Length: 265
Ligand SMILES: Nc1ncnc2c1ncn2[C@@H]1O[C@H](COP(=O)(O)OP(=O)(O)O)[C@@H](O)[C@H]1O
Ligand SMILES: Cc1ncsc1CCOP(=O)(O)O
Ligand SMILES: [Mg+2]
Image (cartoon, rainbow, N blue to C red; front, side, top):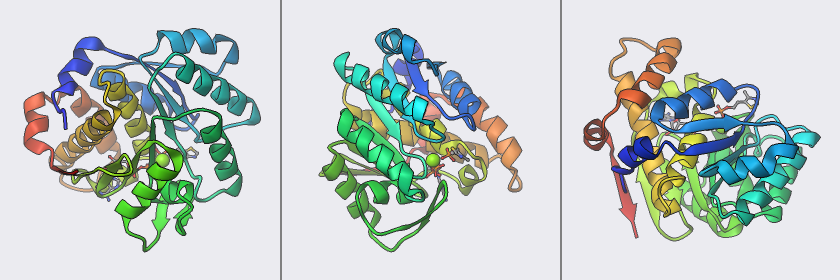
């Protein structure tokens, strides 16, 4: 795990091109901006090539796509491959809506994604593992999460982040678990979307995408955990506001003291 990449990220201020959803776009922009990256969003296919060329990383969020946006996403994904830009996908609610799974599966066949970031319900769906996802949430299942994440990574030929109380990050063989976090993340819609773009920001400065995925998970979950430790009750609004502050203020030393993880070769 390369926690020092937090400082590299802040020095390099990578441009992260996000195709976002209308629900969480502002959280995503402000979240990665506070951390030290430079967000840019676009809904226009005509400028896709310029956007991808200028970006250090590309994040495709499938949270609320339309047919028109799917065409844009396909083009941006193909351009990211052509220009060798790290490509992250967040398959929102593919475990709960059959149409979303069909579209996501087709997109994953149309271009090569480097990192897939989803909750257990979403990653199980892309691994074709039985699971009861609930809308945008992880839902219920009794399969082993490491096995689910590995199956998804192998099937989709990508690094997979299965986020939740413990984040599981795998390339299909090696596994890293990040134990940080707080249940307050679940009280703020957009936590997962922010994490996916934080992953893009780290992939924009760390050429080893497996390391980038791990570091992003540890950084984001540690920031939330540090905020939760300052609250005296479940305060979703205060949590969200302080999360932006912490993403900006957290030092490498704070991160190193907070991060709890294990890597299995
Ligand atoms: N119960 C929990 N305890 C601790 N951290 C959590 C919990 N649930 C989610 N997280 C954290 O919240 C962030 C967003 O993940 P997740 O909730 O899985 O995404 P999504 O919003 O897409 O469902 C991650 O950093 C994850 O570690
Ligand atoms: C509520 C909602 N509906 C469509 S996308 C979206 C946001 C999902 O955000 P997250 O997965 O980060 O909680
Ligand atoms: Mg999500």
